Length: 77
Image (cartoon, rainbow, N blue to C red; front, side, top):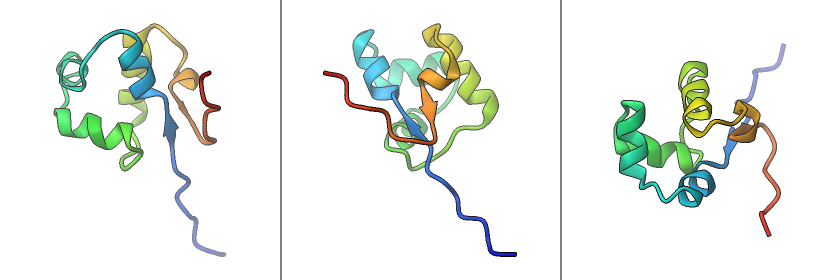
């Protein structure tokens, strides 16, 4: 069996946050996480737990698939 490679988790966090005029720090505080963790999430350096991903989606009022995916999201024009 070959070793399993971690697939990157892509996200639209920065886009959703900016569209609502929320700072990284404000979103982190609303979710109860450190603002640096939010930066890691936005840059794709950290994949959220399922629980955190669901809480983020709930915060924005969208399905989790609208925030996170295994494939890159197309650019918003």
